[in-house]
Image 1 (cartoon, rainbow, N blue to C red):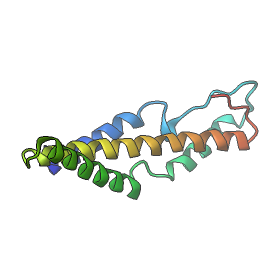
Image 2 (image 1 turned 180 degrees about the vertical axis):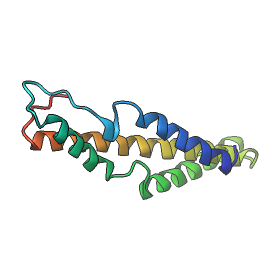
Image 3 (image 1 turned 90 degrees about the horizontal axis):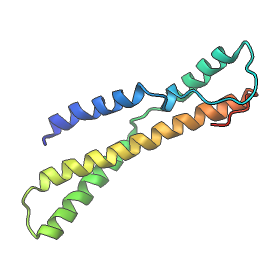
Image 4 (image 1 turned 60 degrees about the vertical axis):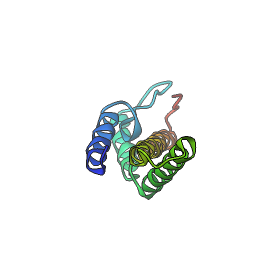
Length: 124
């Protein structure tokens, strides 16, 4: 898989993840009554979470580490240089994906904490 294909696949993966109840789009489960400001509070907390990017410098670093690790492992196991490029791309995908998932989870935590800070009993 070439870098060009990788650059096309990663945004598609991230776009699919953005459509679900994850990351900055997370809607917490609130125990008890919600006031008339709930939707405005949720929108503001989600906007705060969106200010933290899913793909950042750590994602690029994780992709590089994944690429180097996979290529190195392939070279050690096979004792040859065949298909090192494919192994590196696969490792980069795994590394970048893991970092993006972690950043998405961090956005959810931001939404939860923000809503708790506004007085909501967030249970999930």
